[in-house]
Image (cartoon, rainbow, N blue to C red; front, side, top):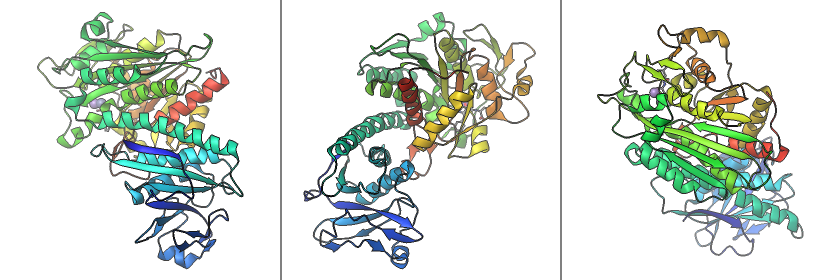
Length: 503
Ligand code: BES
Ligand code: MN
Ligand code: ZN
């Protein structure tokens, strides 16, 4: 059944394996809220834990550091650090992950003392989010996990706060279900997630949502629509290409913002004839991350009933080396009529995105956002914990950064430095598909900008953050579906404002 979470009860913990108690750590000393019972499962629970004891037990002001009071007969107690302050969402996500790592498939009663949190709803949501994200495991679908949140206040918690926490738990489950759905598709072996199969999986999931419609374009349709970049990339593969075009249009009003998302959907990137190394290919099944991320984002907007129109476009293709593969030197014609000289077939993402972005500009989009595992250069620039983004609008950039801070998905704005366009000039076509002189993530972004129209546009290069090689904090090993939570957070801000910031 996977992960479940709901409100819990302090008295009724016969069926749980653990009770978790949060600790606030200031200057090395631990404090436990007065609302936590002084005795739990036969253990005395002090109000203060000294520096020496904490140190000896591996608990520090690092959120998520924890120790267990192990009971042989009854319920064991997890003492878990929330860090120096009680209201940092990222800390609560780490706490959730840490508690689930200790508890495994045993259920946990998590005691949430309301005197210490200023935003109980936000913290509960982050706690459940971190827990649910961390227990994702491609290999162990059948395992069950449970976290019960027990709000505590003297004499009893305020009913409004309790119901706010209950809806926060539900929101966290809705969001993490879709994030984990995307992670599963990304982690799947590439033969099982071919363009055809992936398109089916997206359509099947999205069609469950109200006010969502999905079109899957087959190869004939893609040709008829003159998507020359997508056709050109797909040529080396026996698997036919697909394009998924999904829309979410809520019942309410016509004059609501329309955001168009475009996601890179390379189901396997061998590099094509500009072939990658064996090592370089090992994670290239995840090169469709952008497509899964935009589809999960759209589905989540629909689940939450956000008052905003969302379109998600995903060109899907393999990048292979078959006898008909595009050669370095070949020229492709993108849907908007621009010709592209393909000098490196491994720079394929920008070719399929050029068609996707062109489609996006043909709508009445108030904002276009693309998401792509686009360049190795992005990892060189920012490392594996920070994604790059580019924006033609300062206001949108500000909004995205605020959302990123709230979700813990770190992003860094990079420059659309126009002079670098010179390196994209081609002798025989409008543009070539590789730059020169370094700054590979920037020249890729400049390439895309040619197809992004005049409306505000944002490009995410998530090559480095799309997978967590070792698993880290609440990120499970493998796919991260990086960006879904930030995009949904930002889109819900736009939806509640009812308008989009201008460029
Ligand atoms: N899918 C890769 C980028 C990538 C690399 C994503 C590592 C995740 C991890 C992309 O298609 C690619 O191969 N880019 C080339 C572009 C170059 C040929 C201009 C790259 O970065 O090497
Ligand atoms: Mn490539
Ligand atoms: Zn690629």
